Image 1 (cartoon, rainbow, N blue to C red):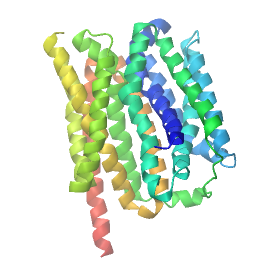
Image 2 (tube, rainbow, N blue to C red):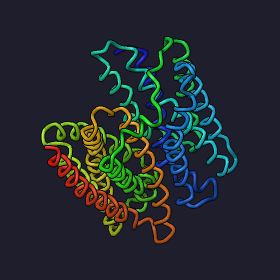
Image 3 (spheres, rainbow, N blue to C red):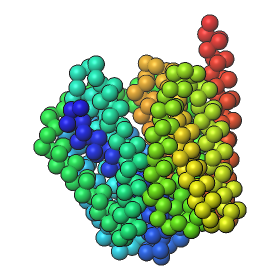
Image 4 (cartoon, rainbow, N blue to C red):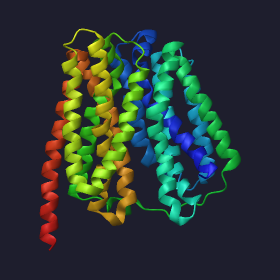
Length: 389
């Protein structure tokens, strides 16, 4: 594989790590900063919402800047933001550094994806893109558990030192090894809006609701698992979840090809809802070996439908308007991060109004709502297709 693609993948890997590692560090951050678990969870909300809003806005504002310059600059800013996160004295300042890191990530990630396709021959563009995108998933599988282990073994601040160090290596690598990269053609706002119709908008809403449900639980996974098992360092559980997520991506893609995107998405949402609710069911158990084993099993299993729905969802969105696939997928990415941010926020609301024990069941209900909406959306899409013929 082209070593330049590896440099870009290293960037998406550390961004994915930075995004997902907070879940494993939440109790430590809350204790050190003298805030509640729910308040600490809003760090995830801040990062995700800033990314979702920042990606299209900053992408437009910086369009005339050279790609390589932006890649280097955004990764240097990301490095500085995480370095500052390791030393800030207050929760409010940590909140600010998380927003800055998210905005830098929102510039780097889509540019890295676009740049990857220009570094290889045309016949390898798909593989190059998937390789760079895989960095985010690897951040979940390896980066988050490593960062969590570092944070719980020493202090959470060293997790951000780890992220900053890898980010700095990435920035230097891009500066030294990447060539000048040409920009793609500019697309007007009016042209972007042509990507939309009612069915696409509703499908994006399904994505937001489903992701919100999933990240209501994922954001607070550390205190949830500790409540069930009395295990404080949950890095092994994050590793199991990441393995399930990787397998889920593969299974989701396979089933999308074999039985179609709509059926795959329905099965994924149903399975995801059940497994999320199971976390609340397990809180009725006393901490024991059985509880530890069951949490490990569910940690692996929930990654399968939780991440298996992503290939199906994107394939379904593309099928609704194949000519505008790149635009639709960019909005799909924003919908994903919007869901992550809302999930952290609503999970905190549930904890404040009741307890950590009700987060799983609340997540499951929300994902089930997403399933019901998608069933209606798919029926409407079929009617539109039938009326054309």
